[in-house]
Image 1: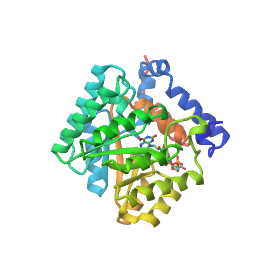
Image 2 (image 1 turned 60 degrees about the horizontal axis):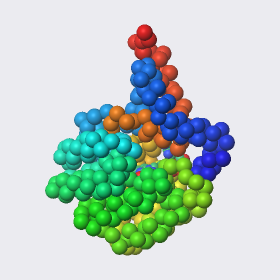
Image 3 (image 1 turned 180 degrees about the horizontal axis):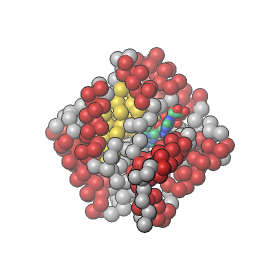
Image 4 (image 1 turned 90 degrees about the vertical axis):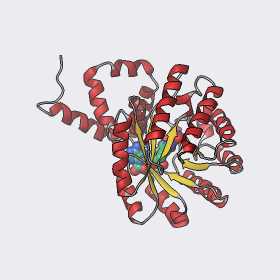
Length: 321
Ligand code: FDA
């Protein structure tokens, strides 16, 4: 049984595990993406979660959200980039994004997209460069949290950068047992905090599964960060958890949701006058992101299938050969 998702039915847990295994298989990804019809169908399914393949598409989705009163985070998707050149290209894209976005926007990134998979030194150099560029125009950079095998390195690079730059933030995963201690250490460091439950499948001994105990820990983490005067983003789509946070913290914290997920919840919070941020992603590396979103909530597979089958059923739909 997948330890992180034991709140799912056995069938859903099986589907979730299979999707994660598919996501981790680079050869399969390559085969799928080089089959034009399959590529197009999957890209259609991904379009619910991903604003588009380029900056312009992301910005036009972003502008619509800003007009409605949301704040936004933007991420050029990618992770585990192993070539120094590609890491530099990714950082260049973030750099252009920083130039382009209006001030209330936040840029989010995975350190393994801009250098950590090559060396912590490269990640440090690139994060420092992007933080300086963002600071010149009053913008913020938020570091995402990846698998637990990388947590130490991510925190080290982040803390070093946060010692020199005041426009940074870090994401912490409530599911990891170590996070309470990590937060205690981060309270002494400049920077904002985003709390998430955690998207990665981890060894059972390292995590709490989705449960009431996890939600209690989540609230405790927010409480400690708020008490220490931190700006906190509570990033979750869990209605019960959001309700608890709303009652306890109201507008002293920000509520953050992924683009395409629980839009009803975001609209409800916004209508209550609460600060709501939508996390928008773009880029050609949407495949892994799609797998994550389907795996963490397997009922999404039905919608993805419907979108693909509807396309196939169109008289002008996909043409083969
Ligand atoms: P949970 O998984 O318990 O789901 C609660 C309910 O939310 C579900 O019953 C369903 O109604 C709804 N829901 C959840 N996921 C859904 C989906 N994909 N589609 C439709 N409905 C869904 N993780 C990480 O490890 N590192 C990171 O840096 C980040 N960054 C990040 C930023 C932001 C802004 C968000 C919102 C999330 C992340 N995450 C993340 C992902 C996070 O760890 C987690 O996997 C997802 O948010 C799903 O967990 P929930 O807290 O939503 O609750």
